[in-house]
Image 1 (cartoon, helix red, strand yellow):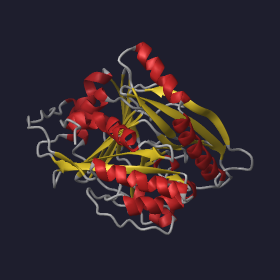
Image 2: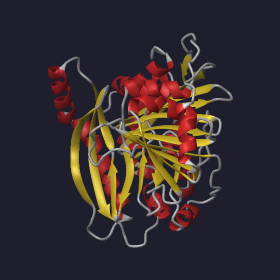
Image 3: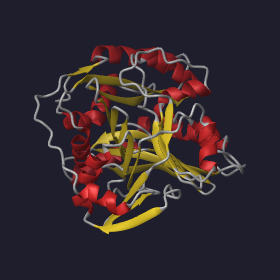
Length: 428
């Protein structure tokens, strides 16, 4: 477990729903914290473990090989890998401007872990868990000041988006690539934004199995991700790419019809299949011979606001392969790039007018035994508490059969719970 290095442990009986808000407001005192929240979503192979980790010191890692060294010493760690880490693995640059800035990657060894269960919490620390428990239950819950609706601007207007999609389709016809995940951004300022309260609101609107609230120094991430990037259990490596999205219906009958429409969509199935093939290829670089397999193809899963098409690919890991080697062979995830990976990343750098940063990256944790679980950072709100900048990004897969206006609307559909959480109409 990630708690292996922490000497003290104590369980406290309390209702989960009564402690969550206090726990998160208490955690904001730390420089670094993650709240991993599966939201009780039934998901194939499970979602994140439900726990909070926090520390005031991070690990100064200049290379992912140092992560291998730290975990080999029996330490569990938490952290993130931003999309721009691609530049270490491929001959690429990130020429577009940054909005909210993150390093390529960062990790920390937790100084406190709070594990959440239905009937209580367990606190792990080198300090006295009783003292920490008293701090948590005495924490005041901040009430966010009311504010006028936020002004949010689209960095790419609809007409530019349609023009760029047409350019992408021309490149597909010319044989440059087969599929590309094209993303757009929205940004503004919010002077009374409270990340803890807004995160809880986001979970109410969009409960997801790979949800995270992250504080990194002065920046916050409110993530409602439905997608797993990579999970390692023993010698088994698992990836669950999502490609294919459709809205929820007004009732059970309409839901059934929409799910059927998604499963029968030639375009959505083709998108998913292309990414499954890419993931199989990525995992094969990490796998023992003949062990890559597709556990589930084109599974349809229902969430609060959308239905998604999810496939599961797994492999047995080559003996001795480290975390850094696995990431180098698989990052960034194919569902957020397209195929072939290098060529579409070049196109993403040329077309998108802001760096993705942590969006399209990954957040997760590594246990002291080397097992890990990392998500895909999508459906997320980014906030800088110093500048008050707020940002959202969304994307969709573009193939030759893509209809530009439908794809634009799909971006807005994916971002709708985020817009609602920050108080924006979602109209641009």
